[in-house]
Image (cartoon, rainbow over all chains, first blue to last red; front, side, top):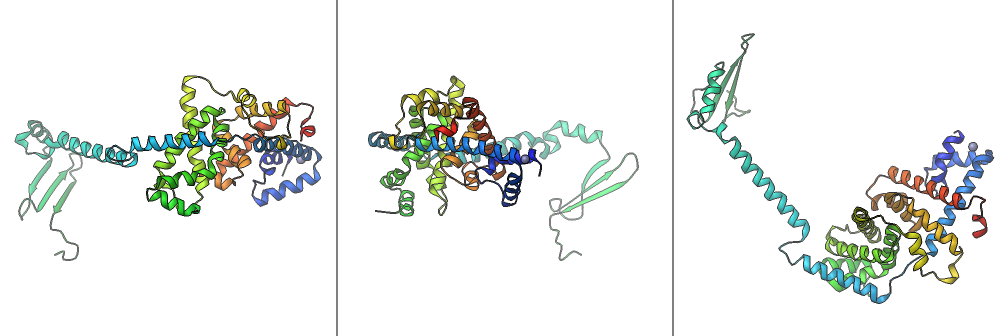
Length: 173
Length: 188
Ligand SMILES: [Zn+2]
């Protein structure tokens, strides 16, 4: 490894936060490179200072202050849970209700498409314009089997879709 | 006297007094972490109250067998970040230096560094982004491993290493700017 790469690893090396393979590579390099060794020492010094600062500059709760803080939090909690449910459940319900509203809305918006032609005049115009799309019922009752024939205007290719409600893979006749 | 596991169980059963006992041993860890995150003791106490409330509310989300202390750290860091975000919207913050000079309770037997050095190091934390600060405080301050820090901060180990590396680089740069002739050695 070159010096540039070693320098990149130094901040982690000083805290023993490198993988063992990289750690070993840095250790070997430091043994033979005075410049990087100097860099390492400078890092080690400043981080040692910072760590020492952290360990000696601590703040502590007074008993009264701590007690008050916990009590305030308890009171807060009592207030917030006096509703019908705690927050995560409320949120869950909100999503469920929103989802249901959306499903209903989508149903109403697209409803004309599922209704008969007479309910929605636009549908008639649509099917007149595309006479090659033809839907007709086959042998059984119309609710069970629906066939759809699509004919391409350009190539004359015919595709027949048969949707059978009673279709069964095992007993296919 | 119940142990931590029993206390957690009791809290989950709805025993509110057990909650206080559960948090008590960690109260100063909480305060120190939030204090260094937000840089002001009054704000830190506010953050702690918010964190306690969250721990209380979401206790059911704590996974048994995992470190409760680290779970608590996670909530404290998140509460601190929320606080910083909110506060940044209103004014600029960070009076760490002033605060450190104002109201520090340091025990005399551990005062290795002189006051000037202490204030200047407090200054350095300002330079770190909240994420870098959190990683540095958890790893170098609280002694968590990179893996533990990654769990606390919900980040990959790689991201933790990147932020840790950057934090240490920035701190070193700042410290050397403050002491260009290298008097750091004399203070240690
Ligand atoms: Zn080198």
